[in-house]
Image (cartoon, rainbow, N blue to C red; front, side):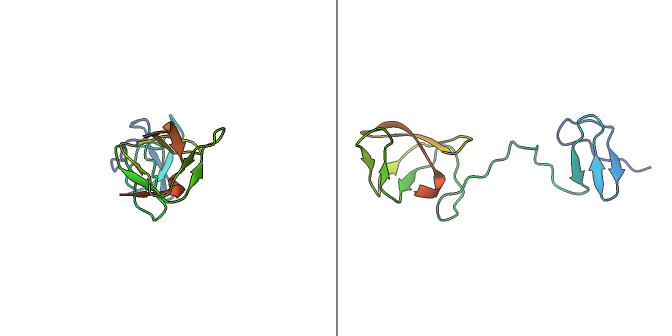
Length: 113
């Protein structure tokens, strides 16, 4: 009998093989044998407009004039934003822009500096 790895989602030791996949009977998580356990949904990958990986605390530059909804303000091209925070949702960057205040931006309109 071979020792199977524990479930990467709930750490249950009662995993079993089903064809080429491993299955956890406690949480019903399925994964391929030999696949690196990433912990489920915790790993979110957010990239900027040119494909650079963004992380919390990065500095970005706006690549397009962005109108601020409900205001006559505009975030101009080339505006540098420091210390971003990545969040889940449609607008995936939470930040504070000088002269405008707290905002949420989409990663498709920014470039990592």
